[in-house]
Length: 101
Image (tube, rainbow, N blue to C red):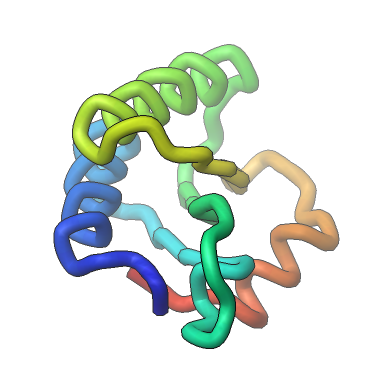
């Protein structure tokens, strides 16, 4: 896994702050492969609650802002699955190949 313990702790603490503590956070994509270099931070967050798309987008913007303020200027991709959103291929891939934080 190619994120530091500090980065992992910031991601988890800010995710719990924004989304609550009943979530799962998965790092996926190139950052799970120790052999690769560079790459953005790809995160998959699964929220067991139903939320409206408007609430999800507000929380997503807040979460990404908090990450930028605490981790610096990095490219971060975020995939969010709430109870009422359908699962897609990216979500399946994240769950199958990612690492839980």
